[in-house]
Length: 405
Image 1 (cartoon, rainbow, N blue to C red):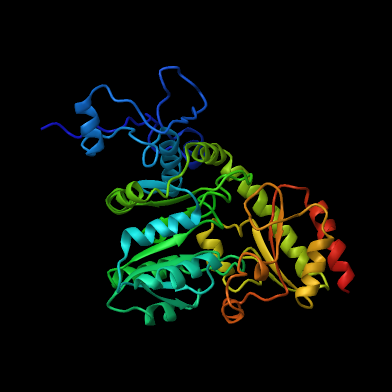
Image 2: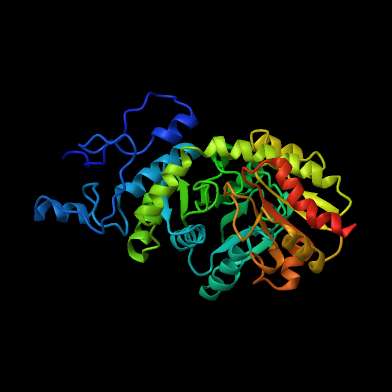
């Protein structure tokens, strides 16, 4: 019996660096020899005969069949991201939340238990506690930074630990290796949301994480153009657990969006390193402003998990910061409304700086007690720092902050 026929791979030199993988990994060129990846806008693919079609639909032969679950543009993005994260495989999804949905559907059943940081993105909390709670999946929410709380929350039914690091918007950093040890001792898996750093700064698999989740809408795209998500991990999970759910449920990443994200990854490290440097300079400036009560950024020496962040994040704090103004919601709104360069929106990872009031937008569906438990106050502002001149961003923020003092 012959081995299963698989899709061809690029013949790249062994051991090439991440920046090379970011611009080269994917699929071999078509017979036309294009240098930049082609965009495959097609819903289905033609087979040479009925027998071949039958084998391909039965997954006895790897080929492109139907774009709900197989498309060249999507495969290029998946292979590129898997290479950057250092995992065996990757599966793309329609959004970051779609990736979390796929992960839970692929791994869990009624009666299973999840341990999750209470500081994760608000929609993640709603999905786990509200939507999957209705189907019998239980979730315990614990401190992002207290390893003892994670360990104490483990039950015989615990199947998954889920954390994002740093968190959005407080930039709290968890000890990935410590959580991986807890998960594996309990026979569970550790999933890490790597949206805030991207593989340009952090590769959670190096610290023992099993699954890496992404919202490609953020730094992977990098220019705020499309929605996309992904799960990276071992082939046994990606192909064995998640692909069958994707094929049935259709939480699919569109070929166009996959192509945009693949092209975005080509400049990922260049952008993220430049944005991180600007963010640290802004964070240091904000710490000294009399209108600011507190600044949250892992690159600051004052950050509670600064040393851990530097170890896990390649010595960089990332390109997102948050800060509390002196006052409350009214003062925060006045600072936001005084900006003329920053975009008032609810995203980050864009080359254009985005300013957000988390309590009323990204975390607006949480109850006030849930927000307080996560440390999100009405005085908090989040800034996803882009590539504008730092002096211009300081002047833009100072316009509102100076009016508070």
